[in-house]
Amino acid sequence: MAVSRTKLAVGLGIAGILTAVFGVILVFVGPIVIDDQIVKNVEINPKNSLSYTMWKDIPVPFFMSVYFFNVLNPKEILRGEKPMVEQRGPYVYREYRQKDNITFHPNNTVSYLEYRQYHFVRDMSVGDESDVVVIPNMLVLGAAVMMEKMPLPVRLVMSATFTTFNENAFLNKSVGELMWGYDSELVDFLNKYLPGMLPTTGKFGLFSEFNNSNTGLFTVFTGQDDIRKVHKVDSWNGLKKVNYWRTEQCNMINGTAGQMWPPFMTEESTLPFYSPDACRSMELVYERPGVTSGIPFFRFVAPKTLFANGTDYPPNEGFCPCRQSGIMNVSSCRHDAPVFMSHPHFYNGDPVLREFVLGLNPTEEQHGLFIDIHPETGVPLNVSVKLQLNLYMKKVLGISQTDSISEVVMPMIWFEEKGYIDGPVRTTFYVNLVLLPTIMEVMQYVFIALGLFLVLSALFLKLRDKKHVSEDAARRPPSADSDPSLSERAPLLRDAVDRDCPVPHVLQP
Image: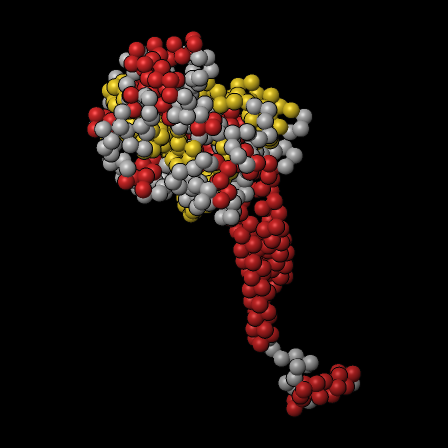
């Protein structure tokens, strides 16, 4: 019985030591295995069905919500009073994005064109696309500012042209017309006699260039040779940098295409990306951690310096000529039209911008943009990008349509592009890239704990076995070796036996 307990203790001890050693090995090897699996899953490779499908065709719902600043006092504005606006929206469109012409190159890059389509979603909107709103007429007020320095006779001719085609300072159009274009005799006239003056040759609309169009030819790194470069832009339309701005730094094409980022992010990481619509690279900064549906994330937001002017933030000097902080002049990439980009309601902008327009009320919750990223993979979990389009307008001598308009940066619309991982895609992502690595991480400590338990059990059995041996020894009759009196009498007994005589009674035990 004692032999069996000893063998059991030895067996448990050996098993415990091996199990604990295996757990310790997992502590060091486990993260390497997990990271290796992440690398294989996030690189742009057709063999990776999960990440490649998410990259090629965004499988989750993506929406664009549009808000119009309906002008309440257009006649008073023409007399020089402050504009008064009310927000109308959202008018929501389901956005579909699909990459085409995908071509892999020997230098571990891949080129593609990404096409966009928008479909109106009535159930998520405040009204129908037939709703009528009043906004500034970009054709008139934009052209007026563009022609301000031209000879007076030219401005007078343009003003007469506006009058001929019944173009006024403000438009009364439906949402659908303003979004996707409306027929304009003035546009047809300008395209015929002044080709190239306008960015469009068909219907004129704020988003007419977006629908059924692509964002240009992107070439990005696949990450197959260096995962730190995955999704980063190598070139856009064959360019390593753009030429819209005044400094080399502002013209740089940095970061990714704005859909995914390299894995293994830390709180010191940033989210740089190039936006063809903004004609520049932008960078978001870390704000806080969080968890959604069991998946950890890092939230990145726009820094207050994103649209700051060159005075408040010298690196942005290349985007000037600037006005107040909070608005960015994008005229250089918008055919010199006096267009400015900002956060909605001039959020994070100079307060003076809101003093000249009545009806604005910026809040971080409603107007701040953010992207929630799973830091281990660089995959966005929740996206909410919000931007506002503004028109700089003023009275221009010789163009009667501008009347006595005060100089102002006038908000026209703002829009939000949002999407989030949900449904089967979220489940697959959670299981493969969150749950399984977590289980593997937990198992290493389970093996260590189990090994220690087995070793302690072996020690317990060994100590218990020693205790039983001691108790058995205490219960056995004393032997000659253990009783000195018996040892002394032993020779007398042997002599008596040798003489074949009875043992004396006194020597009997």
